[in-house]
Image (cartoon, rainbow, N blue to C red; front, side, top):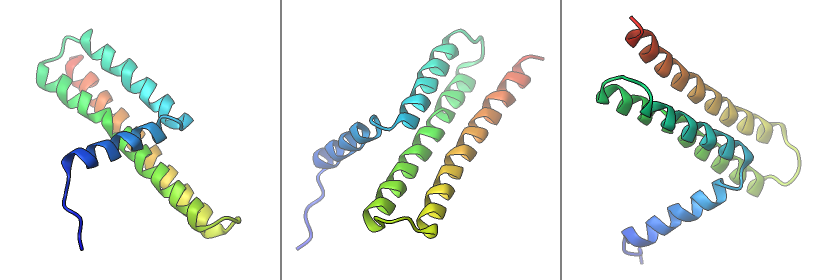
Length: 117
């Protein structure tokens, strides 16, 4: 029998996921940048809509890191020994994080260039 959906339970599952992510060094570094750049937004004299868009862009690397960590943990569960395909899966997920950081940087750079004129 399928269990009934529970927003409360799912919320706490998500909090558990955040606790697991907070043990990952890469996530802590990315979260530090998230805080730093979020604070920097207060000092920019951009319109609210631009600041909101820039703030939302800061979540992109955090989301990518969450998926990267999930992939790494799943691969570790399935494959105890070194396997080239396990390495490929982890490397591709890490590349996704890199791309997310590049996209976020371009979004910020675009706003900075646009509003510097």
